[in-house]
Image 1 (cartoon, helix red, strand yellow):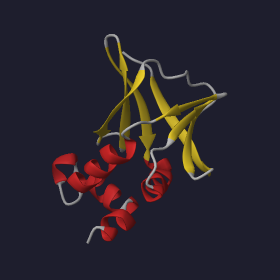
Image 2 (spheres, helix red, strand yellow):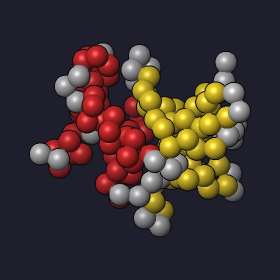
Image 3 (cartoon, helix red, strand yellow):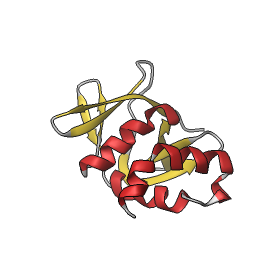
Image 4 (tube, helix red, strand yellow):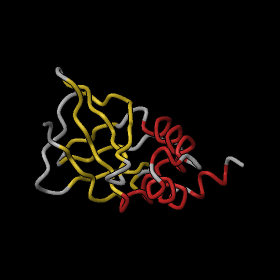
Length: 129
């Protein structure tokens, strides 16, 4: 099973949102895939990294969703800050926006996940109306 890196926090710097994993996490391997999926049971969004055999994952649990909202509001793809590296998360805002709109009112993702997403991303969903 691939290592699942989990984003612990986010911050804004120079007009970009930076995401940071915990100190014991390893640097994601592979290249940013520009793709995002969900783990509705784990209440997380998952950004994918292309690897030779499959995908690596960067997990965004519910506690960092406010920073994901901030990233959408900046209109600029965020980055992953890893020690001294800055890894652009290409396609992040497009993928996340598409998922948020698809999840809204869609209990196929599970009622708990849909409700949590609608609450956390309410400002984004209202802006589209």
